[in-house]
Image (cartoon, rainbow, N blue to C red; front, side, top):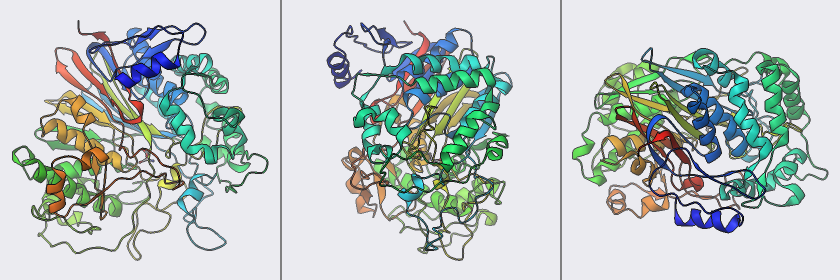
Length: 620
Ligand code: GLU
């Protein structure tokens, strides 16, 4: 617990007993208030056995620990954590959104994945984001805050699918802790308030959203208790009626009504466009099990999420490229230069070849082949950064010749920027890494009236128009299609047994964040908490690399600049450039097996106000 965190707790909650946590402990410590719900104290790392959880939020982590303590497995706990995040982190999680779950089953020794990505309504098509009045694409902010951007949500079906296939408890049991937190409330933290501040200019346009998050036009007060009785009732209703309530029943009808009849306040200044979703779109939704992506790196087996996410393939291709070098023996400048060049190349391939594989032919095996890694690796010049945008490679050409790079003309996809990742491990050694989101921070900005949750804007992850004229774009909108994601929940096995698991938010920077953490841990000698905390840079085939201020201050950065790498921090809202936002990249959570049933679980320590890690039985 940092000094500032301690200060916040003691100052803002005068009635609580101040709790100081030193070292690593297990389940979150609690302190009591005179009137409000219990206050949990979080820490960013824990070591022990019996099961482990890391998530963005202490209530959510605690919900998972309770499920594990009562005999639940990793999947049971993951659903409880995700549902609770829908309450405590409603701007990045919840049943209004979707995500991808990667799962290692200790009994079968296999990795499974669940695709809970949102889908495009059947009555929408390629012109989803084209303004009929002008024939031109809508601006990104106009598209985000609208009914048009709302995809058929996948998280609830993912929870059902995960529990049915791999869990031991009912959906109702898994929702219970979340329902309780929604009803009892939880203390508003600085991050919660910040999310509302960044979105107030659009939340105040919708009566349902402003009533929930801006009551009386005021931002939530840090330390005050936030309750969401509507969401508690929604969870209770789902528990009673099952997911069909959402996927085709009355709750689904409420979503459809909201998307068509946007709940605008009287005198709203925004004129958001309604969407296309109909009840049959919800009734037809599925969250299929899919094969994971797989590559080897340093003899480890790295599993990730395949299409419609580009996460697993792009992390995997980058690792294949870097397998051609020995980062461990390089100077820091050279190792980071190779990291940046590898993702520059891999993003060119991602943008050209990856989309929803039910609609486009994604050459997954070719992109993940060591031969293609060699084709791309030989283009890295140790003395000079390539000029972006670089063109994609030819996955059908194997290792091919080393064709010099010619600058390409291509646009940049506008991937939005936030979600959450949770990791869970249980006493049997099962592991879940689950990244889920409502897309932008605050999603479409629209709360379903009386239901207590925000709707996603996931469809803005599509390219609105082809990135390059005359070149096929795998990520254009189509009816029933899932937009390409960057989410990259990852599980690494060593000798067939789980070793590491990690995942992060951050839009397209998820891919570079997950890769950078793996390299920090596997090549650069960092511990997992250090790997998660280290400053980040994200090169995605653009002329400048997005970087955190602390990365720009590193002693290695002038050396990188001398090689032609250039860096810029990104600190304005993509929805409203007058709003300053955090320039930090991602907020990862991960875990590592230490042997003899012991696990180190590590949450983000600082970014987004820090996450929460806990184990069932802490080391003495
Ligand atoms: N919509 C993003 C994606 O699927 C995830 C949200 C985020 O972290 O930005 O890649």
